[in-house]
Image (cartoon, rainbow, N blue to C red; front, side, top):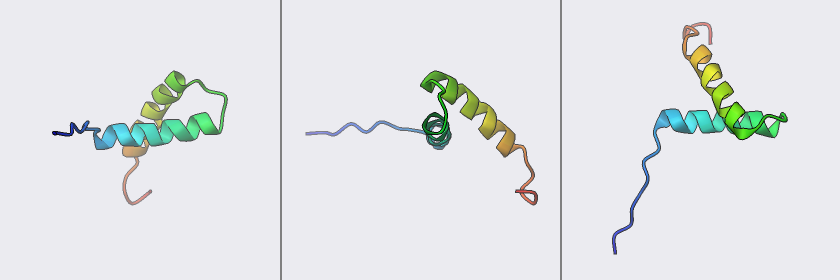
Amino acid sequence: MAVETVYVSHYDRRIRLVADALTQNSKLADEAAVELAKHVLNALDHIPEKVR
């Protein structure tokens, strides 16, 4: 019997991690948290490594 695995990209895992943190600590709906998480990660990705 073959077991299918679902591929989840590293980016999608990061989005889910941030979105979960946002929904646990606010009254945001999941969809809004995911959209906000995308903006947060985009901003974090553009901070130079030396500054982070």
